[in-house]
Image 1: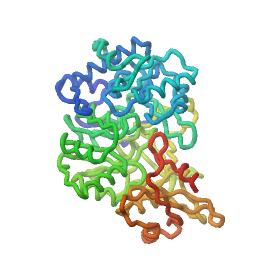
Image 2: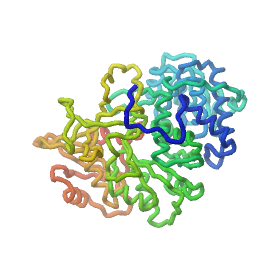
Image 3: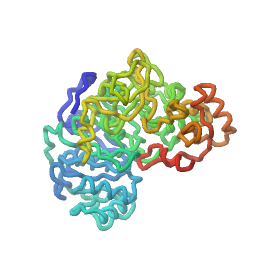
Image 4: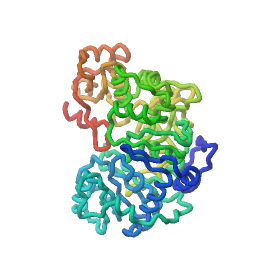
Length: 518
């Protein structure tokens, strides 16, 4: 594993070699403090640790041994937390699975990791059971979390955890042991299994606590799916590390999330640009007390300087822009709230977790400041490797496949995916740049730009726009705004309004689906 010199440890809490040490320390320090809250029910650190130990014993009794895989296909629930941490205590490898996956997708992942156990719920349980019939994997113990739906013919997780012994000795040192297999979106083919260690989780958790200015008792509103690398690495990880409260919400509802902010004194919120836009839209007619919020975190495509500024004005707190990927455990480059900020930079080349450089793809040489090239990274958050793809990463630097540039002061600006670049008449158009300009329009919720084959230019940019209801926004207004802000060759030659932009199975914008509409 690589170790970037830019990483700075949390100054007040030396890191153990086992993430679960944080949990045991917090249980000793404040056993009665709320650790997890979900749908009106709260669990203290004492209750959480008991359930994690019971889950570890339960999995052991079911035949889960050191290094075995445990598939967890659950939404944002308390049982996701106990099954994940219980698996880690068992020295197993957790394989979180997107709850939107279908039978074929789950079967492919099961074939890849050959799990000893799986934990699902009423909605995902039939998918797991059907997927198992199509694989060569045998002797998989399936647990069903009771959520009101039928979990017949499998072991019920809730009751089994309650019946298991809470006496369990958590292993002392597991730093370099495999902890998670997190799957990429598969936008270029079959999803790859990205392997992360306990040390990765510890490093990402430590850095997140510092960046978010979290402290014991901090409340993190978790609406991003925990089964994503973002949810585990930068939400669950830092919250339970610092002794905070993980406030879980299964589905995104902007009004209900604002209710949570007010009623539970939320300190930290992490979301994609569309979520912040939803908040800005619904608060046009609603007053919200956001005094408790200390940090907002935004990431993904479509982040613009205008959106960050408007979101900060609404929350009354910094909204940090960042860059990460599955291979960096979702963490990577962050803005430093204590230094000068340059929107929409994602931070400097030497951050808490990651060092970065930008190179020419054809020569591998570092490009001049201000010039675009491929973003390369290294550091403590980097993956340990790929399942069945060990030969794909052999260099010291990891090639991200993202275009970026670095300014004279070392600030990094991510432009777009290399594969998404549109070449029109010999000029490069970065869709994310154009999307950001379109999304500056008040009536735009989200935009996507793709390339359409063109006889003369090779390709031309076209836009799909999800506009707010009851708006008079026209295609001409969209084109005129882009022409006013960017070079003419970048403006979308066609604008199509849609009710919603398509997403792939892990919630990322599905550009291929849009290209198929052309």
